[in-house]
Image (tube, rainbow, N blue to C red; front, side):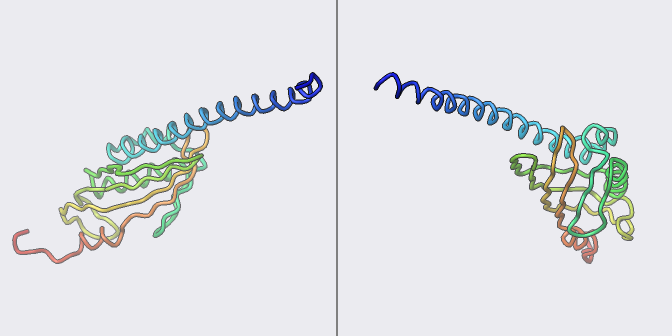
Length: 172
């Protein structure tokens, strides 16, 4: 290979080298961000929903947070999530959300989880039943700059209401 041919290929080799280095660096940064996003969502499930630590909402949720549910109203802002968790935990003081699967890519985190609790307070107009319930849920979160900014929730509300309203057996 002549000097001119090598001289012409040098910029191309430099460009390839820079691209490989930057895409490797980007992949590592992206992997770190995805890992951090998963940790934020898992902390929300544990601290906020399962333990009822309402102060965690300030650390985990954006003031611009919006939750879209397949059924029911949207929740908005940090105060909206705090209000909903407090209300839910009044109905089910022992509410627990156990994450069964978690998948993340970019700014999205998807979880499939099992929620359990005992109804000790009124829930959607239903008087306390003392019944223990268990439902499956799926939620998609969007995390930006370390805060949850958006959520799409798909709980098995039908299954929950069915468990709370099913006729009681004579043993109950």
